[in-house]
Image (tube, rainbow, N blue to C red; front, side, top):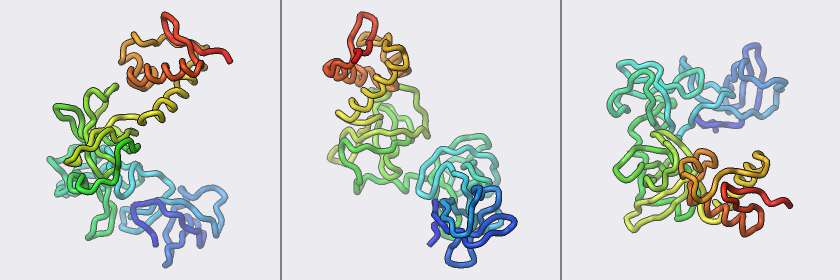
Length: 277
């Protein structure tokens, strides 16, 4: 069974001048010569992405698209017609967004957050800007403190609505944001709180002691790379801390406090330094 719009591991069944054919249970799927790994032989298993080419043939590639079926990604429009827009998703053939699947019309060079799906009528991979239909908090698949993947969806008065694991929505409050973000940005986060009405608050990074553990390793590495000293402390500007360490000032203070108790660093009047082992 070959899944269109996804990665498949398929066996090479025959070789031709213009590529190799991969086993799909029928006549085979062509992997064009320019995408065939060097020294490929009959019987080899290859991980490929499968989709339809411009002539509506099912074809394979070792290129990596910017998203697969089910993903929500930010893509740039390269061509706009009356029928729809074509977005660059990293393959030889652009992905199509029908006009009926656009919110307010797309323009060339514009960037749009879309969900990749299989069109039921054609069986081809397509994209839609109307992603609300695919998001619901009715039946949650996440729990508090769980690590998740966040995508910035839209700005509100209290923060940003984010998409959680391509399934749910939550809010990343302004007081949890320590760098510039924009719609379409994707990063790791965790579920901070789930309210009775299934509304979700999230935060960036990892939670609890794991966050301290991860960030502690980062601080120690940065100290090692900077001759054992860094000019940052609990009076440093939060934006300077985030710019250098990629963490909030609160996390920095919590993490350095843990490292100090573990006798791995010392505090000075102007920063922190490694403790020689």
